[in-house]
Length: 319
Image (cartoon, helix red, strand yellow):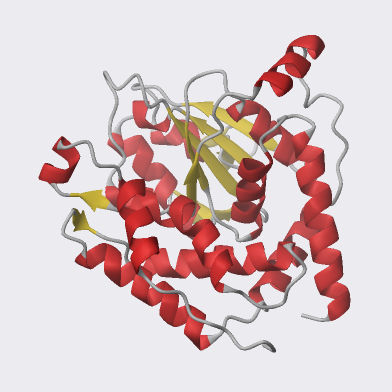
C-alpha cells in the first residue's frame, strides 16, 4: 500500500461512515463494523429487536456505494428458489431463461433469517461463501460487492430454526444496533421520515472493490498472527466452551483487522486492531458447554476473559 492509497482509503472510509451515519444516528461503531464487513467481502449478522434500524442500515449502505439493495422476509414457507431464482421455459424463444431472485443485489437484507426452514437457510450457503448461485447446473455470479445482512430477533424464538454452527461461521461479523441514545432519538423523532431517502452516493461499487484489494496488501506482522492463533486456540481450550473458534475464525479476524487498520490510515495491523474486533468476529463462533449455558454464561464473557489473559505482542517502533 502506497502512502497515497493509505490516505485515500482512510478518508474514503470516514466519508462512508459519515454518510451512512446520517441515516443511523449515534451508531458509528456499528456502521464502521458493517463497512468493515463489506470491504472485507464478508457478511453481517445483526441480532436486534424490531425497529432498531436494520433495514435503514442496509438501504444506507447500498445508497452510499451506489449499489442495489433487496430485502427478503424469511418465513417458514419461503422456498430456496424464492431466494436464488428459477429457470422458466419461454415459449416464444423455445428456451429456458433464468429469472434471478432477490439474492442478486449489492446488499441483501435477510430479515429474520432464523424463521425460514433449514433447507432455505442452506440456499444461502453457496452464495455467501462462493459469490455465485447455481440453478439447474448453471452458475450465475452475484457481482461485487455482495453482502448479506441477516437479522435475528433475540426475544421471539417460538417457531424459529436456530442457525447451525456451519452457517453462523459464514458470517464475518455479528453485532447489534440497539436503541439510540436520548439525543439521537429526539433528532430521529423530529424528522419522522425515512432518513435514507436523500442519501447521496459517495463512491461507486467498483471503488469498493478497489478498497477491498488495497486492504489485502496491509501488512500483518508474524507476532500479530501468533497473537490471533493464541486467541483462537484459547477459545478451543477454555473449559466453558464445547466448540471454539476455528482456523476460519482466525482468518476472518485477520481480514477484518486489515480493513480496520487501513481505515485508520495505517498499512500495518497492530494488536489493538485485533482486540477491537475480537468480540464481533469471534464471539458468535463459540459454542458453550451445557453447564456454562445453563449458568447464564455468554460467549462474549468467555472471550473477554480470554482477551484479558492472553498477552498481546509488543511490536517494534518501526514496522
